[in-house]
Length: 560
Image (cartoon, rainbow, N blue to C red; front, side, top):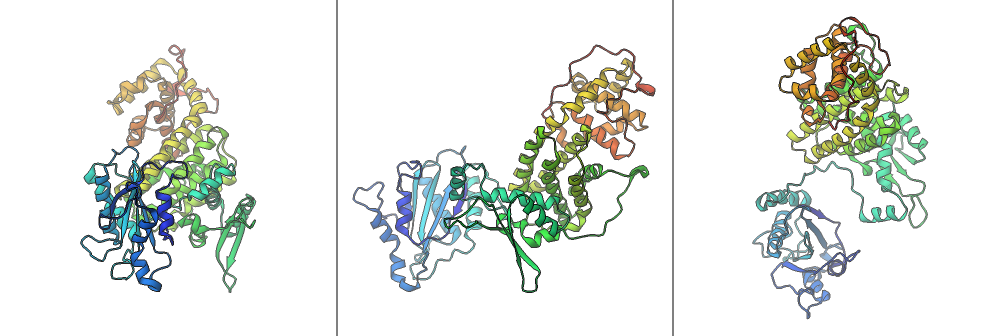
C-alpha cells in the first residue's frame, strides 16, 4: 500500500467535489463514505438528502470556530492505494485502515476526544481518500509532524497483517515524481517524458562526462538546455537552474528547475564535490603493461562486488555512485544496436545510486577519471572489449542490488534489479558479433583439444558440465579455455572463479556467459590471448586444429 499526502488545501468543499465527482476520466464509481470522525457524517453518495455543502460545513466546524487562528490552508488530504494484485478490500477494511493511518499521523489519535474531524471516501476498488480539517476540537492546530513516514510505517504493518503485497519503501532520497499536470502537459506537447525527467537525464550525463564544474556547465549548454548560474555576493557559485527552451509557462517564460529539485544528488554542492580535483594516483599495471582506459573501467567494475562485500558503507556508496556514472556515460559511446537498452539501464539505476548513506567520493575518484576518459576516446572496434565491460557492469549491478537489499533499501534494490534486466538485453545485443567469431574459432579446434577442455569443465564444474557441453555456445567456451592455456594460465582455476558469481544462475546459456567472464579474467592478468574478434585463425601449440567435428550452428543468444 502507498499513502500519498498532498499539499494542504484551502477549500474543503473543493476537495469533496472532486472526490464525489466523475473524475478526470470518468474513473470514479459509486463514491461514498467508509468512515468519519463520529460515524454520523452526512454522506452525499448514499443519502439522497445529504449534500456536499452539508458535509463540508460539518468538517469545517472547528475551522470556523477558530476564526483567524485557523490556518489558511486547513485541508489535509491523503490517498491510500493498494497494489494492483492485492485482493479487493471491503468498506469495513478500508475504514479500519483509515483510522490507523489517522492515528499514526497524529491527525486523529485513537481515543482523543479533540481529534481533527475527518472522512474517508471510496470511489474505486483499490483506494480511498482521507480528508481532514487541521483544527482540533480544542481549537489548536493539528499535530501531524512527520506524517508521511509515519503513515508509511503504519502501512508496512497493515500489509503484513492483511497479507497484501509488500511495497518497496523509500528513504526520501528519490527524485521528485512528475505531477499529474506535468504528465498531462507532456502528453499534450508530444513528449514521451516530462521536462524535469529530460533535464535530469541531461544533467546526470553531463556530470558523468565533465572533468570540472566549468566543463559541466559547458556540456549542459551544448545540449541546448538553458542554464542560469547563481552566485553569492563574493562571486562564488551558489547554485544553478536549468530549463528547456521550448518549455514555458502561461507568460511565455522558461520553466526553471534547480538541480536539487531535479534530484537530491544534482545540487551544485553535490556535483562540485564529485567533480573536485584529486591527485592522480598511479594505477596498478599488471605485468608491467599499461591498461587502456576501457580496461581500467572494466577492472574497476570487476572490483565492485568485492568492495561492496568488504568495505565500509561510505566507500561502498561512493562506488555505487560511480557505477551509476559509468552507466550514464555508456549510451554516449555505445553502438546504436543497444544504445537504447543502456539508456534504459542508466535511467533505472538512477534510483539505485542514492541512499541515506553519505558517499566518500574520494575513494572512487580513480574510477571516475577512467569513466570520463572513455567518453573522450573512440569506442573500441573490438566488440569483445564492450562485451567484457558489460559483463563486469552487470555483475556489479547485481552486487549493488544485494548490498541495498541487505540494508533494507527497498526501492534502490528494486531499481538495481530492473537495471540488470535492461543490461541483460544490452549484453545480448552486444555479444552477437564477437561471440559468433569466437564460436567459429571453436569449431576449428582439434577434437583432442575440445575433449581436453571438456575434461577441464567436468573437473572444475561437475554440476554444470553436462549442461555446458550440450549448449550450442560450447565451442566458443572451448576456444577461450584453449587461449587461456596458451597464455600460461590455469583454465580450471579461471573457470571456477568465473562460475562462482551468483549472477550465473540466471543464465540460459552458461557457456557464452563464461566465455566473456573468462576473457575478462584473462585480460585482468595482463596476459590477454589473441583478441576473440580479431579474425585471426592462427593456431599455436596444443590448440592447433585438425579437421574438427561436424560444424554446429552459431550459438543462440542467451538471456543470462
